[in-house]
Image (cartoon, rainbow, N blue to C red):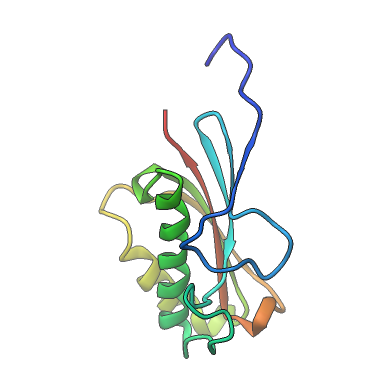
Length: 136
């Protein structure tokens, strides 16, 4: 789309993904770009279910929720070019979160990433991750 104007944004809600914890779309698509809202470790089948215990289980749930959003609009982890990770207990949880996160991507295909320690997340979650994806 070098000389053309990008189409207007498409705001997506994905039926299989967890209900948002605040007023936002699961993702917004602008041309080949997809901006995926940060996902929490919530159960997509039961909003009221307790969050999983521990950083590994929460990271898995977050990644699985991100996959639900991606697949819901025809993208996949192979299209992810950038990730932002927010964790509440950085020193304690960074190594275990990294190992779990890393297991979702093939060798040599890791997105660019920023990881930020924060003082709190919705529902007292330990981790939240968002993505930017690109599919030409």
